[in-house]
Length: 169
Image 1 (tube, rainbow, N blue to C red):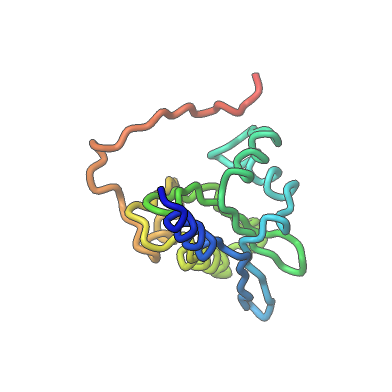
Image 2 (image 1 turned 120 degrees about the vertical axis):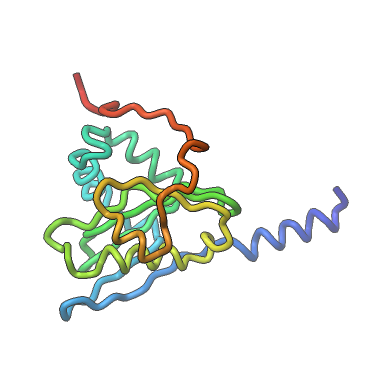
């Protein structure tokens, strides 16, 4: 690769480096903030929720930290208190997987989940992807608003699934 090509590629990558973004959301006369700034995440809130929810019951702090470190993360805040979270595992080119989405129960039914997913779906690093996937047992209606559908050909999809992996024995 020539030096000119290396410089051009470097410049293109630098142009695509995502700066932290945030957006204010108003619901029931309260102002919430959604952000992709990892430094604002409140780890204890995230771990506390994830270790007790159905999809990651018993997950360790170490695994949550590793997941956060290796994902695009999004927090939802009220007065500097984290009340929601989501993360996206992606190559930012062709594929993304939405995971660990939650709004604390006391803030449910206010449209905040919709606002969080809307912020994620509009994120500049997540545009032009060929496939964006997720798994859910109970939030199909939320994700349908963003054009998620059941897998067209489930017979073409495969998985390794280890339910209960994080539970201590």
